[in-house]
Image (tube, rainbow, N blue to C red; front, side):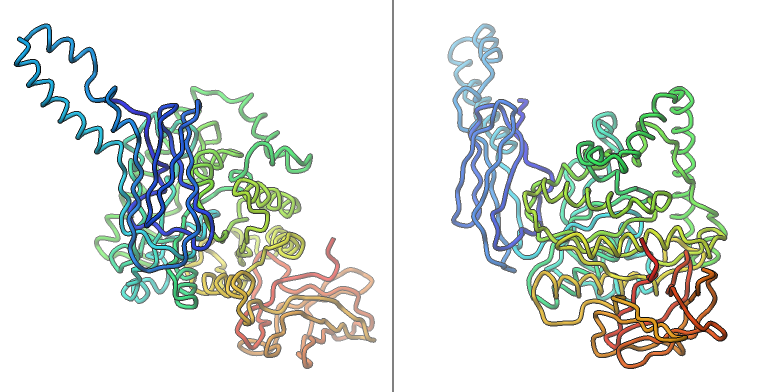
Length: 549
């Protein structure tokens, strides 16, 4: 028997529920169907509306490592009207004598009722209650723990039954899962963290969760909602993307593209691209199974097929993943969001604070939590395919810095020391998860710890020197690995030259031989830059310029 009764896919075995807040549970059902949710001693009901949607809100639950069971049931399984289809009962009565019909009727009724009961009663097992965080962004958040530089060591010790991860199915465009259902998991589940499956966890999120779990001693759930190569515009709705005339350019450019697209060629290009990706993946899997790694593996594989053909079925379209991924998890109760993204918005870097701010507002409004914490990673250093001295990545980093200072309840983890000249996906992800966890512990959980590296506050000019003052000095400033580097200075001629920088207490003194009156200082201001200003708590300073907008 067909029924519309279903529960949102994120509600599955091994899930983690957010502690100490109301817990929404939702799904679909026949209009008028009465749905009941039972958890512990709570039993709550709701009726599906004319739009077939239902939602039940459970009372807050304290943190617990004790496994729980949730039962979600539909009243249809108890309804006499659904015991046997009338047409089938009529056929039985017509074709058989009354006695046989009664017997068969009873047998079929029992069988159907059992099947209905099975399909209309969902049991979710091994539920824990603790802290739940969404891990969003693009490829450096999606980056698997198994691909990190210390994967073997970390995964071998990743036996954490109190940490679980749910991967939101990656659906590239609305309707893709209906066109090809077999390509997407029918029942995605939360995975308990074990050495056998930890390698699939997003690396930054794993290290974040492991540190939060250790610090708070409560279960931690990660909702992984990321996809490589995506702009922040992919993760927000049309309403918010079009609410500002500057960032609306993302939608305008896409609409212009669609208006002029040759759909026949586009579909042909899509097929060819999918085949190229499939070949790449098969070669990689075979090579890894044969223990090919490092430089040898990179030489064998060559570059990943990129970019995918632009068009309506491309996962990078503005607002696309908002509808196919984000909306699928709203309003699952969470503590906050960790986010690592920005590389795909470098070409419009000067707009990023606005773009990211609108995206954050969109999510906070969806979750009806205006103070939902957003902790994010600043993009790292990268040679940009032979353009290390350009500043488009520096501009985006600055925009992220502005966002962390201007958008309430946000904080930024600096990653500038974890980059790679030639690899946009550096493999050292542990420090990033750890730094995000420090931000959470200090900003969200109220622990008295240093959570940030030095943040430039102001410059004072004194003769031939520029004196730089910082917040988050912590235990003191330090140059990691030798003399300070990465500083440049200019005078009235606006020509920047390498500068000498020295730590003087809690300030940095910057000067350059022959420059009598410095005007402007920049630190780490390039796509790729090797810099080393830290505090003694081990956290790096963000790149900055004193002549910013």
